Length: 115
Image: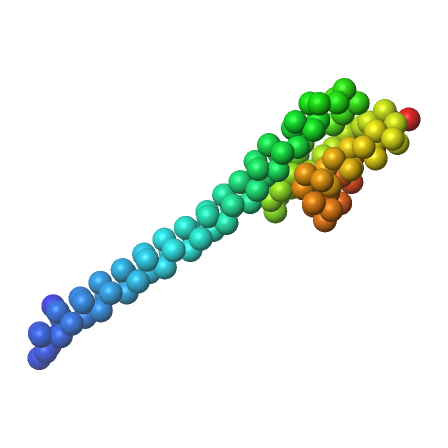
C-alpha cells in the first residue's frame, strides 16, 4: 500500500491515526460538556432566583405589574412598574433580604414607579 520496504510501519501509522482520532473526539466531547454545563448552571441560577422572587411578587398587589426576566449570563431581574415610590422601596427591601444587597442592585433596575 505504498509503504515500500517497511510494511511493519503500517500498523504503527494506523495506531497513531487511531490515537489522534480518539484524542480529538475526547477533546471535543469535553469542550461541549463544559460549555453545556456552564450554560445549565446559568439557567439553574435563574430558576433558583425566580423561585425566591415569585412569592414576593405574588404576596403584594402593588407588585402585580412586575415580572421576572432572565439575564443571559445567569440570574434573574425584575422589570415592570409599581404604583408608588414607597412600593418600590418595599420591593427593594424584600429583594435585598432575599437575594442579598449586591444581587438586589442587579435585579431591580428595570422596575420603575408608574407616573
